[in-house]
Image 1 (cartoon, rainbow, N blue to C red):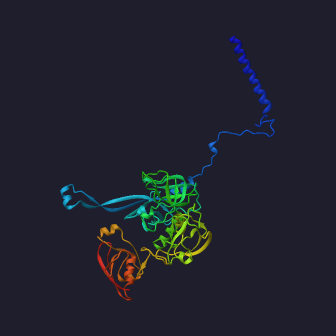
Image 2 (cartoon, rainbow, N blue to C red):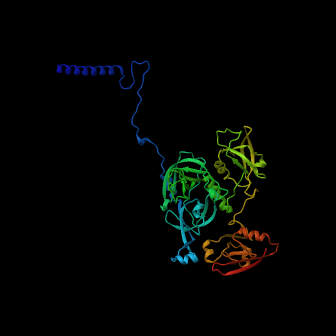
Image 3 (cartoon, rainbow, N blue to C red):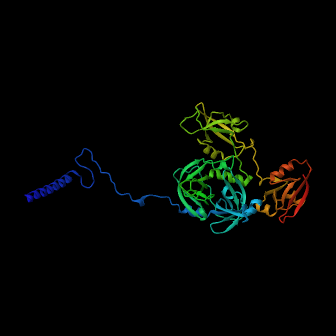
Length: 478
């Protein structure tokens, strides 16, 4: 009985297999994977495993090789006051702890932007420093001079005396798109010539960081996920062609270490700041003369972010052009703007007395206004910085904290180029002027204001010291 059951099962299995083979050969068309006998051929989808070697990734090696030679290691030193115990608690209680000078060192990165030695870095890297040293990728070391700094954008410009240096050219940061590959090059954690890669995560980020350094803060950061840590500040953010598109500046992290987001100042802002610092010593900030509110306006779709004009300042360009409270600014010179950061980035390209075309929505219609931009003083004049001003035919530079300490000075401004008038009175390059007409001075602007108050052909008395600390005074006519 059991044998008969087993034979029946085997017969059924063999018969079923023969039927399946017969059906397959009769229904399926040989070779093309389509079903015959249907009104329309039906093709099976191909699910072949994907070959990862077919994926195309950008070649970042050339950009990295170019950038590492143009990014420098910036080291700063300064003397700071510290209080320390004498070891005797009773002495410390009655006489206080001892005050002494101790060295403070810091480090960061910088980017060579010209063959003759101009280097851009962050202001927070060099602020309050007395000595700035720059180490190139080929291990050569130079003493750097501070040309100028701008706390509002957290940028600074350095200069070393060398020629034929490798340098990065400025790329178009505005043309970069979210998702594009970028490289961050710098000296994180004192590790020189480090390259990390990532993509642009967002553009025109406003974080409010620079408001801690300046009331005129300007922020429109490029956000990336390229790894950046302490020491990367001032380094390069480059595109896949090795062009400079930003200066790496900060990270947002609860642990003070990289956690996925880093931020760079776009070259849209960097290039203008560098040009101004080289030419004038300070940045020529151009203002519209309006302030904005967060709430929406009836002139615009309330679901969209918008630059709603809340206040218009009298005697500034916007008021004179006819911009009113309630207008919604949408573009500057045909470049769309919808956030304050985007507006700042566009305005940062211009100087006082430049004309810009402002597009704004009023009564649900787009109108256009030609605005003459003004400076912070409300005029169209170019402002001069202390290190670019010329007084009495001479130029001046800041006295370092070390020189003041060594010469026991509280005030002073150093003569950089004495010129004919001061040279004729006996003043030489390097002389430190401490007072003019018995009034202390710390800048060329201080000297200028004193000289302006002197009557024509009036007497000007200059007091100061030379590099050896010898006190001298000189008298000359205005």
